[in-house]
Every structure is written in structure tokens, then in C-alpha cells.
Length: 167
Image (tube, rainbow, N blue to C red):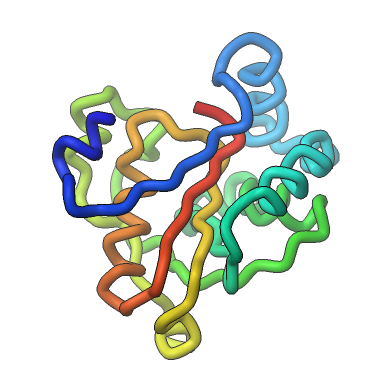
């Protein structure tokens, strides 16, 4: 609702499957921050079902991680979730941001963070006039999703939906 007030001309369609608390928070800690990749398949049925329930989608786009996070963790947690659920995706976005990770920032810092993404050149034509779904693990302030939306909108995608495991 807050984003709709700030951007009344934008069409929003977001789904979060869970609430970010309790057991989900523990799962994410083990999967994402401790690097237990085996846990990627835990939500595969729910993820598949949620994606099937959406408007038609041409391309699923995971939120990318920084090179530093990729080196440290060894995997992109969102791509891991999609792979574990056998959901095809295209790595359209590239993380070019610098500085602290979103998880290390306070709310105001997150909301004011500069654009961390760009579209990989090889995918620019492939996403024009396509219906896309942006997938991320957790929606905290929505800033990450909005950054992704902004770069995709510039490339004239037809429709953008968003989905996260938790909010």
C-alpha cells in the first residue's frame, strides 16, 4: 500500500508465501546465511503451486546476488530455490551494487539505497514485451523488488509480477 501511494500509476501484483518469523527465519538463516544448500528443496511444492496460480508468465527472473555474496555463500539462494523446484528461469539481472548487503542495513538505508541492478546485454531483446515474474527470498521494504522493476520497465517488459517466499 505504501508503494502504491508513492507510485499510483504502477500496477502491482505481489505474492509472499509466508511470514518472515519463527521457523521460516530459522530456515532462512540455515539456508542462506549458513549455506546449507540442501534446504533449497524445502518449499518446492509451495513455490511451484504459487507460480502456477499467477497470471501467464513468459520469463521468471531471480534477484541476483553480489559477487561478494556469491563467493562467500557459493550460490544464489533464489536460483537455488527455483532449481530445486525445477522451475526454469533466466538470469537477466546483474548485481552491480557496492557496499553493505540489504540484510545489514536499517530500514531507512534500504529505502534510500541506489540502484544495484542492470540488465545483462544478452537478455535485453529477450525481455521486450514479455510477461515477467521477479522472484526473491524475502520482501522486507520492497526496495530490492522496486529496483529490479525499474530496470525491467526501461526495457519495455509487458507485465511484471513479483513473488517472494516471505514478507
